[in-house]
Image (cartoon, rainbow, N blue to C red; front, side):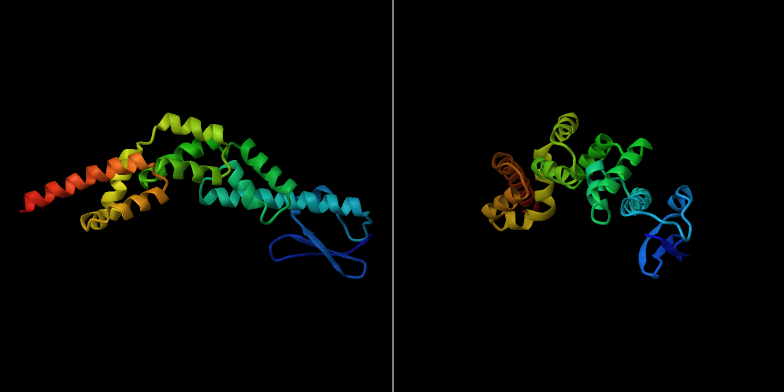
Length: 209
């Protein structure tokens, strides 16, 4: 197939058209220069596919940099996000490049995420689930959880004080326990935290009286 014409786009890319002025695809400036693309150039299907692959990989890297400028990502999460727009090869190449540039660190990300989730009074079960959803492997998750040792009892107490004291004061203990179970807290931990918070409520009532 012959490249009939080339037009620069508003975004600084180069749109390629065949000899009948049908749009093929666009490439970034690096791919354009590197491959000496010009009008009248003849390429077979494999060569065209390689050009598109190179350009898509370049765009995926630029997109990855954009994502990472906004917030941290784990390698798996970034790969999954890139796969929504690019093919698996381009997404994987972009993630590999971000790792090479030391812009990704899964263990650092895991520690930061665990610390934040602990601050949100999440159960260990919920923390583990959210980290898995970020594409982190289970061995790393368990290692970080063991290292940071989130206190589930304290998290459960804090959550009760923040969200369930009124129900507890109204005698809706079973509803509170059910809500805590849905949030991933073990029954024994939830019951112990509930008793602790209930005793606090009773002391406050006595002081008030």
